Length: 97
Length: 315
Image (cartoon, rainbow over all chains, first blue to last red; front, side):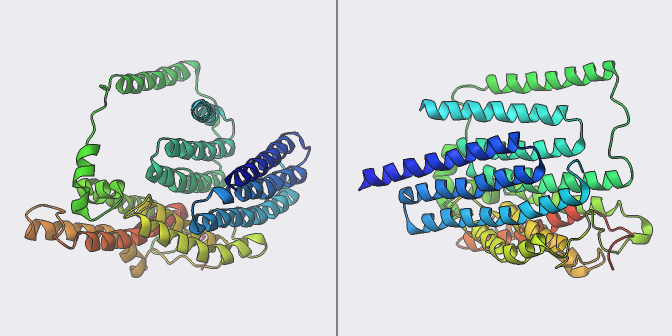
């Protein structure tokens, strides 16, 4: 059972790292602010989500699991608010402002 | 263990590179962004050193609030047209600055390398005497009991800093409210964030303050989170800053250090030593001081970001 949990952790965290790597590549390579934000928020939301999901079986207690999920929810929320804010700002003032 | 070594080397190299970037940055905004990123890497470094209390403070105050403070300062400077340095310093000045920095770095490096091995430490004595403080977190024990005077001075410095910032106000704005460094955004995602996040933030801040007795956490971290929540509500136009003439606000800023000093004087009177806590009541008194100090720290930090009262403040 614990080997199964470890395997799940490994797969999920590796997948999360994959999303972070792809998001970082997108942030560096994409041509304009909107697509860069798109890449960045995907990394934050899905990448961190998979990492948290992978760490859940390793959490010692229910309280720790809830803390992990709360961290993910807060980052989701911050990303969902900051992304559109940056996008609106660049549309209004141009990317260099 | 080589994985951890690789991670540590990466952290050290990354924070050095970011520090270099801060110095090299051509634009003030770039420098501030890199400074915040540097603070976050330092936070990770403190976690790796097992100093979670310091890591929390670095993340909340060193990277978070200081970053906002610098951004607000940049905005104010840009508004009066002082945002850019007109010309680069001459070669002689550059060399002098470089030599000065190198000398400081060399002196610090020498100081670290000259430490005897094992380094002098009072950790064992703290661990042995911690039971007398009724606290579980040795860091809180040191901050509130063994070196309580340092913490008292730190808290008093914040009050002095607020007075210093306020004293920059022009005469006609005095007693008014601090002006907004940014335009207030009253709709969109920020308004939603400012409505939903503060309840969560307040719970997290109280949790961090409460666990501070037995686990990493404490008043400065909790105060920084509370200040951030207040600033968020203010940025979204949901909360109004009281004018500097407001007595309740002044009382909030001064209450923590005042209570701490009163406790210190009571110790002098009844126990024979400044900041000696009454026997049997050590933990309740510490908790009371921590709670009141948290409110003072939060108010002072928020007021520092808000800046001096200005004539163009919203009514």
